[in-house]
Length: 395
Ligand SMILES: Cc1cc2nc3c(=O)[nH]c(=O)nc-3n(C[C@H](O)[C@H](O)[C@H](O)COP(=O)(O)OP(=O)(O)OC[C@H]3O[C@@H](n4cnc5c(N)ncnc54)[C@H](O)[C@@H]3O)c2cc1C
Image (cartoon, rainbow, N blue to C red):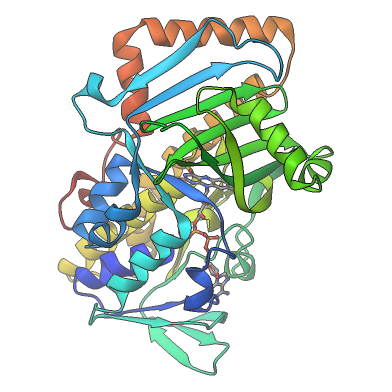
């Protein structure tokens, strides 16, 4: 998702781009491959609009009108302190959109297919990237070779290209597993997203189209296999106990997915003629639904840095050009990664003094209007030095 978005931004800015993806296009858009959804921040939606991707995605995306955050435990009433974000309060129509990952990929593919400056080579794995003077050479698994001024790795958390370049990471695993499923419910969600902080981790209910919600259930790693192995009725009962009654009768539809959760930050984002973007550069806890948003912001910032250099006649692969991107994005990624890590540690337990402290925090943010609105701007990705694409302007 990050690689193709970045490829489109560069191609629309006038550069010739090749994007290689080891995933076959049919798999990339298949429900069986990825059952996740992404909460897209509204600043990133603006970029997808500029790139022409949103036209394809909008009919399938669900606007988030409100977000309710509460602290609780299964079988215990949720704390009286909760946090409520409402799009109307900031004069907006929505706080962002929920889109299925397969639909995001399909929309990106549809635009890529029309873009004359972009060649999508898929399925093809990049086997090696070698710097040769003023160029970089990439060898692909289909036998083809590409020569360019710059190579960008957006090959995900377990990036082989990052490792091959010798860029190290700081990282650790969480003792948690992310369980994902789609739930159909009787009552409409009215565009409300819920995040319940349960002792084993956050339990998010993200509104989808057609009276469906996506469940992102963070469970203790040692308990997750037993939950995943439950039969349909027992799994439905576990989900219902955590959902509460507000959406009526619930039923899990389709498969259950599980993801190991971990954290990493790359020590460098760039090398001569080489840059990292997306999960390849940083992997964060899904507690705030910001991983892809962070990667899309990388895409917008890197496209702007590279296109500005090209317009000035500079070498787009030169280290001093790429360092501008690194300076721009590394601090933001570090801050968000560290805050999601701290949030997860603070909320994923049932320790009474910590519970009181965080409930007080939720209540305080809820009571202070300007603070609440600042949080909403953060969630919308509308804060800090924004790349042009995130403001809704061409790169
Ligand atoms: C449970 C869960 C819920 C989440 N919810 C949200 C959310 O609500 N909002 C949000 O913003 N984020 C969310 N995230 C995070 C989000 O899914 C990731 O940040 C996002 O997928 C990263 O995108 P990416 O393009 O960088 O990497 P990936 O999605 O991992 O894509 C990497 C691509 O590189 C390709 N590839 C790999 N190696 C090679 C190679 N050698 N050559 C060519 N191609 C290669 C792969 O085929 C793949 O297509 C969630 C994550 C989890 C685990």
